Amino acid sequence: MHPLPIQRDDLGGDALQRREFGIVLALLLGWQFTLAEFVGGPLMILFVALAYRVFLRRELVEAARRQADKGLAGSMEGHAAMDMSIAGEGTGRSCPW
Image 1 (cartoon, rainbow, N blue to C red):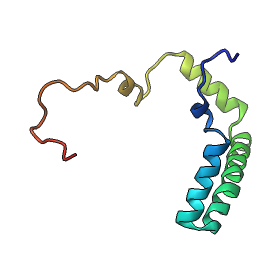
Image 2 (image 1 turned 30 degrees about the vertical axis):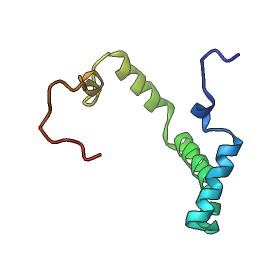
Image 3 (image 1 turned 120 degrees about the horizontal axis):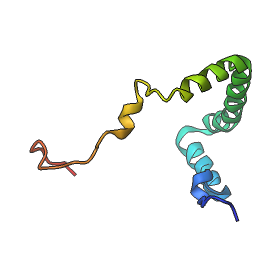
Image 4 (image 1 turned 90 degrees about the horizontal axis):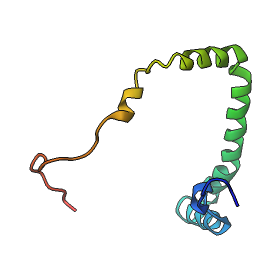
């Protein structure tokens, strides 16, 4: 058993779902787009992984770790603590659906 409870959908679905996705792509957008999607996706992952190897140097990672160890909040980190609950009646406009 895996140490974390991972559901099948968390990992991109099963083979049947991927096949169905390919069929829908082919029907709606054509076989050329479907082929480009399934060939281009893994190529994009490969290029991004290689770019990380080239541009993400050890010195940069160490500098980022030192900055993170300071415990200072960045410019966007406060947004995670925002209260997004809805209280009250709102603006008076109702949802059309």
